[in-house]
Image 1 (cartoon, rainbow, N blue to C red):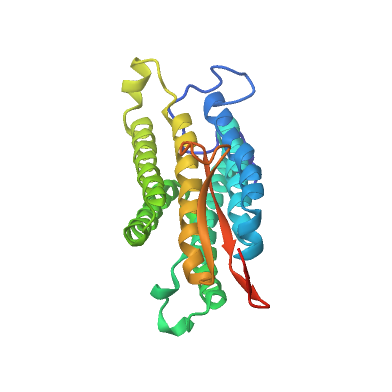
Image 2: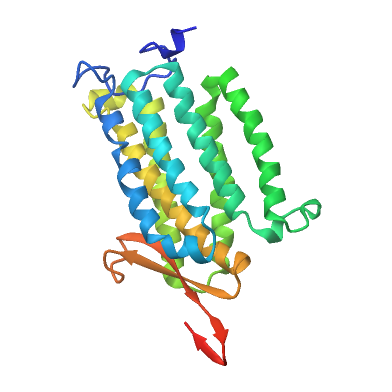
Length: 269
């Protein structure tokens, strides 16, 4: 029963040499590259405080789950244990679930949900629980299945980008898509062409995948948070900004809210 906890019990082994840098960490660079999952989400929680107050406080679940992904991935690559692999992949699955519950456009809800997001979210959680069980039974297929889940997410992002009138939002969407494509290319090259990259003395493409997929993932969450305002809180207006300088579009994007509240014949913005 303890075998899944043993180092090296996972059938998955990435291109980076095991214990080549540290005698205590199986894949040092793949482990260390997850630090971005731990450092940036607390910043995003702070930047999205107005969004959580005026639109949906559940946005912070996304940032918390990204931290769980980082911790799980770091544990997996440090030990290459089967339980680490499952924790890593299940954390990603639940990030997808949370994003679907929060951001799936109401206009695409089946009639059975009567435009009720809580009811829709309950329906989404059920297949996620089933998929969690299947992931434990067939862990080898998890990585490819999770990769495929990103395709419909980016499909919806493209649809929403075509609807937006903000060129700033559109540019961020293009950058998000480009980073995602580059991330997938790194993942596939590390998985399929390891010998080539080993001969080039650069077996660290999976570490680059961690950095790139985090950027693509949190950027997609920012974009969907922006799109969700029009459907969830139409009386408010979403504004895409960047930190630390708003005019530097390669900074950290976030969404803030302009609140239009009419009281005593005065409008406060």
